[in-house]
Length: 95
Image 1: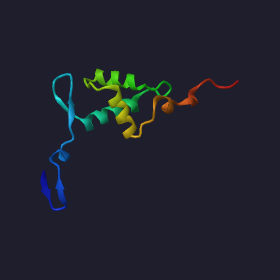
Image 2: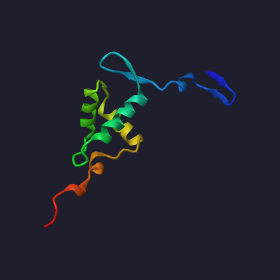
Image 3: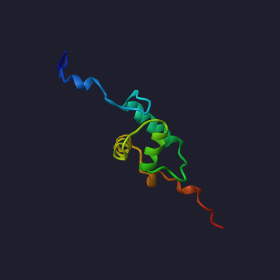
Image 4: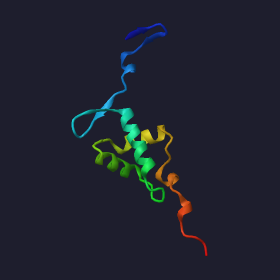
């Protein structure tokens, strides 16, 4: 533990953790979250990606994470499920 004028905090509080990417490099969880946000922002809103598809997209970028991790981050970041993100306004026009 480390001492601070505002109290004592566990040392692990100052490290955010991470994962290892395909190239063997360490990648912080914050970087994984940023990439997840980029993938969601760039998806086709008529056919949004499911959590499994998000995992596949991250894997294509060399980031290997479990589906449940993507789901946890998506919920924590306030990103809706694929069904809720779908843009229904682009359907066929009524004649």
